[in-house]
Length: 333
Image (tube, rainbow, N blue to C red; front, top):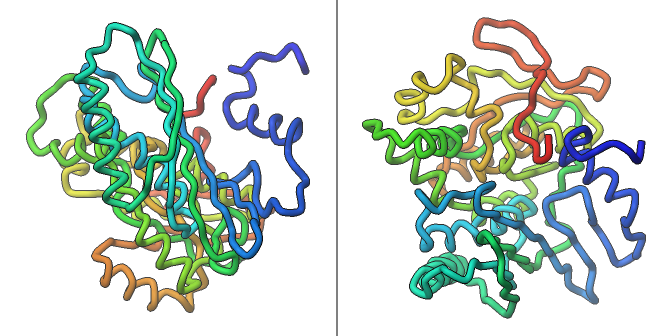
């Protein structure tokens, strides 16, 4: 077992092992490894903590990613994690590795983008670190707060719950494909923008938590299928998703054909949508519809929660019932 390498176990196999190696049993720890955010009880308050790393050549390419939107996105991906728990983001630390030949103007633009996103969500930068690096590396640790009774986790989904998702899926992944192909495709601007400048659903997450509309929630960062599987695993349930209910934007439908014979491919396993995926009793459907209208954010019912022994199923547009064989991208594999 110890002779296995990372490509055999993959990112999530590694996380599972790390969870066993160093997981804490501190009674103040409400939630540790296994969710989007760590939660610690500190006196009468609940402290939220999350971190994400972006590495040049893996998460972004400087040939098409300018420093200003990179700064914004670096914080946005962390904000999405806090949103998935219904928390309030407060402060962040940023550690950055930089090649020594980068112009100071590039770094200045990056930090201006970072500040733009911080000001938008009223989050303060309180420190960080800098280091020499062969490629650019950005790591942010975001701190937040929330009310213990309102917080949502990946665990909590119940058999019979409906499965909902905000916004549209697949735009970011298709936008990335268009950037990588270096093609100018008419009508693709919104797809590229969704990849470069995602909008975390902070306000929506807070509202879902405040009004106790959901039983479990996660943000769609790795892809619909793989993030659904994380929620199912932590909640110890199964699910059925109807493929033809997955919300697709008009630009996506228009531009997807040259990149995939399967029109749902990027929506199912593309990743970096930063939408919210949550489960809720059907009795909450009316309140969820009202919330979607008030915030002007589409929310779509895409599936239902089943007993764990029933597994994870997809219903194709022609009615075929199948279990997805490939859930999505996974580091190391």
